[in-house]
Image 1 (spheres, rainbow, N blue to C red):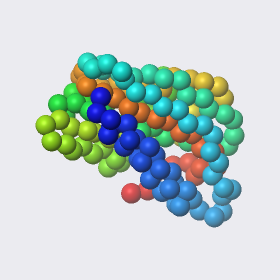
Image 2: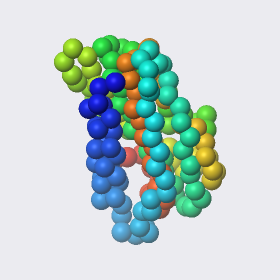
Image 3: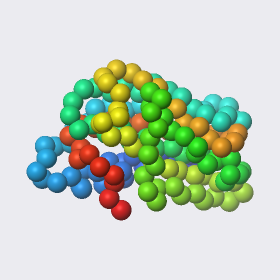
Length: 153
């Protein structure tokens, strides 16, 4: 897997976290960090990646998942599903982007709000691609005290 792929996921999370923190209205309590986890494929030709992510209790939780895929085919790199404890996450609008030379690196963000987020404990995040890819790197972060609703454009 291209080493630059691994370095792009943390930057994506840093930018998303900064946006989430800056956009919270003052009428709500401060956003709290809950947990973070990550995983990456170690072999080519994979169509999925799964890893455990712990969530705590608390009010107004949100799960954010960032995915980066490396492959020669933009079609194979399409993400067909991201689930947590079997529940589908929603893609953040306009968050999918890809680029590259002979191959592509595609990144995309997903979220799940408190109403459908599993109870406290470790559950599985599962990312599925349209076809076999050269590499997948992903991370998940949960927060508490987040305004519940779709991200603002």
